[in-house]
Each structure stands twice: as C-alpha cells, then as structure tokens.
Length: 168
Image (cartoon, rainbow, N blue to C red):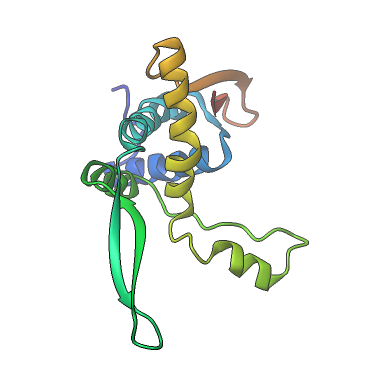
C-alpha cells in the first residue's frame, strides 16, 4: 500500500515530524524517494497554514506598575486567534528544534540572542518562510509548490532510491 513507508503509525508519524522539522530548519534534506514524496504533502500543508495566518496579529495595551509604583502603559503585539490556532497546530506536527550556538560565539552572546525566542523553528516559519511564500503567492498568483525533489540514484547497500527535498 502506498504511503505507509513499511512502518507502524507511530513510527511513520515520528519520521515525518522529524524530517519536516529538519526540512523547515535547514531548507534541504537528503532522504529516500518514498519518504520525500510523503514529506512533501506534510510540509506543504504546514507552510500553507502559516502563509494564511502569519499576519494575524493584535496590538494589546498593557498597564503595568514600575519599580516606583507608577502605572506605565505599553503596547505589545500578540498573535490573533487564527495565528494562535495555526501556531499550535504546527507545533503539534513538528519537533521543537533549538537555536544552535555558533562556534566562535560566546555563551553570554548566545543567551542574549536567544532569550526572547521560545520556539525557534515556529518563529522561523512565521517570520521568514511564510512572508516569503506569501509574497510569491501575490506576485505569481501561485499557492503551494513550496518544495522540490531531486532524484539522486540508488543507495549502495540496499538499492533504495535516494532523493533531496528542498524548499524553493
């Protein structure tokens, strides 16, 4: 039966979650042709959900007291209901990857850079990937088609057809 990858449901979904997370983080992964074809529809649905809701934000005015007891009004930007629902749905279908510390970066600099970001993969999806594809959708009138699969030939050992899947 196509689409089963020879795995139990839990194993198959774990593979798809892992590979979807890696593909969204790195933009390109190498896997088997069968897994790449399964992964394509899985990832495209996640990206479409992000593209449709990435600009749903609400400005909220927050009244807080400072150290001296004075009331201070600040405005903060929060997710609207559609974006929040989409964010939670995407978080359920991907693993939460953490930002990687650069080799020459100091630990204090790394902490300062990442202290505001709780879910780096989701932030990348909504702040970088979704706006890029939304702009492409407006210019070309084209929704979908976010991934490309290149066939590489057979793997030594078991002869499985290898492929590279990438975001375009």
